[in-house]
Length: 282
Image (cartoon, rainbow, N blue to C red):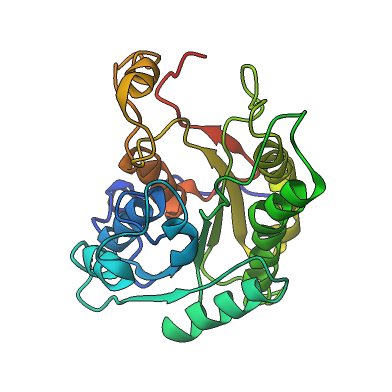
């Protein structure tokens, strides 16, 4: 097989809108303080049209609460970042605990974005309802499995069905989220969450192989501790001191990596679990 030619000089220059004309679904993007929002803004700034998934009841039940401006305020913040005047931002709710919910969400996003979906960022997760080995029970395990793992696999399945095998459309991208559960001492106080996220990390290479024939890359990102408004006080300062930079990760830190993985520059990266933790020292 002949070698591919070296890129022409013009091909080496970066397009300021590398995702122009692409469409993306970002799940778990219901709060302006969260990673999903930061990812959506980056994708929009790179030229993509974006559909934001939110589940307000989940956020409202957490200590940090739901976004005070609601989903439309979140969507407006993403619209302000749009790099392509022809791109759009849409949003919709979704409780992903039910087995049919992921496919419905993918269908709604594709319809809102013109019938096509190029990029899937599965950022959502269940917070709370967990415990250590002594307190964990079947209900906790089932709840985290349903949201953190099963719904993600079903989202990827529904996404893949939009890209028939045998065709070679413009490269698709799938990004999953893990939590460093395989590093250091693990997460002994969050057994259900750690197991569910560990399953995603383990499935990344399998999913990448399954989607290779559809011109789709699949990668997982571990963002490390990120300041999404869930910790304050002395504990916050203790965690900050564990980073060489002396600060927590901010939502835009993993968002920059995820946005790059969505571009053509990352077409040769697939099946990887990438730690983006700023040198966090456990």
